[in-house]
Image 1 (spheres, rainbow, N blue to C red):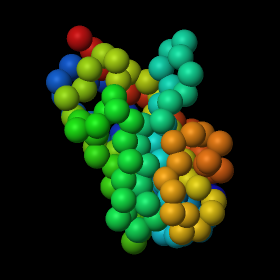
Image 2 (cartoon, helix red, strand yellow):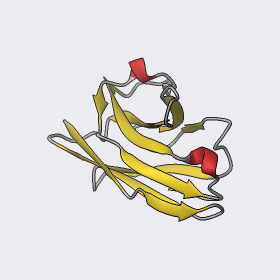
Image 3 (cartoon, rainbow, N blue to C red):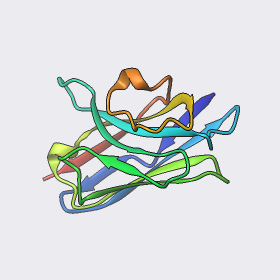
Length: 126
């Protein structure tokens, strides 16, 4: 499985971006997906996760109400809509997939995910 994230860029504070993560190699329609981010000099942190069928989502407190994770299983793609961005959101954003199909619990730790994309840089200017 290969994950390709895109959509990052430079945006002013208060702006919005939508990240996409397209999977290839096989369908991930049975697998939970997540987004993580890593800011310069900081550890990777959980951002959001979505159930295999999109029926449940989970967010880090720092992005709740501002970010929305969604997926299109026909396109084998997961999205992260980010709004009201602040400089604290500046980071490399990576998508990841849980290899266990139909897992009930959404993971918030990197160890839960087995397949990772290369990341896309989001820079928010003040």
